[in-house]
Amino acid sequence: MNALNIVHSAISRHVSENSVAIDATAGRGYDTKFLCELLKSGSVTAFDIQQEALDSTAELLEKNHLNATLIHDSHANMDAYFPPESADVIMFNLGYLPHGDHKIFTRFDSTKEAIDKGLKILKRGGIMSICVYYGGDSGYEEKDALLPYLKTLDCDLYQVIEVTFANWTNDPPFPVFIIKNQYEKPHVKRY
Image 1 (cartoon, helix red, strand yellow):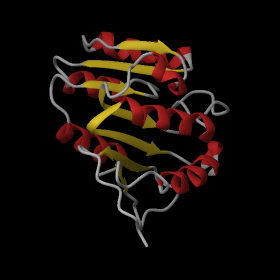
Image 2 (cartoon, helix red, strand yellow):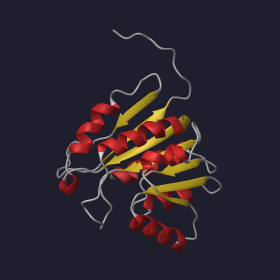
Image 3 (tube, helix red, strand yellow):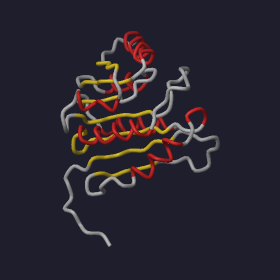
């Protein structure tokens, strides 16, 4: 069991065949492929800023006779392509492109912007997954800024679930899930 197994398991239980899905970080296309196979009659859109990532994703999809919309743009601009409350699932993999240029990796400022916009795009009852890769070449900065930020999300609107591997060494990637509550809870003053 690893972070991606947990993410795929949770998402497969949370969506239907005709859901609308966004892969916010296409990478080598494995999550895009997973979403295409899961959503037989739905739609899948994948974003990446690197043409190499989109080319890899396109090749993987073609080889498996699958279709998705691939967009060469930052995930921070996803609101230009999707209206509010239109997606059932949004997936992120943070870090750098596997077997790619390790000098190009996700950074908190654009990731935060993408998460904020993604939460508006997410339907009520929808799920966002964030697989956090850190350490190594990309360092800890994004993780160290992301986790405190996620704790500030309004608990009346979102449930944030962080899964850690407490006894694993060497900076294992871990998943975080944000579930948009089906109904907005009445605001309760907390003391």
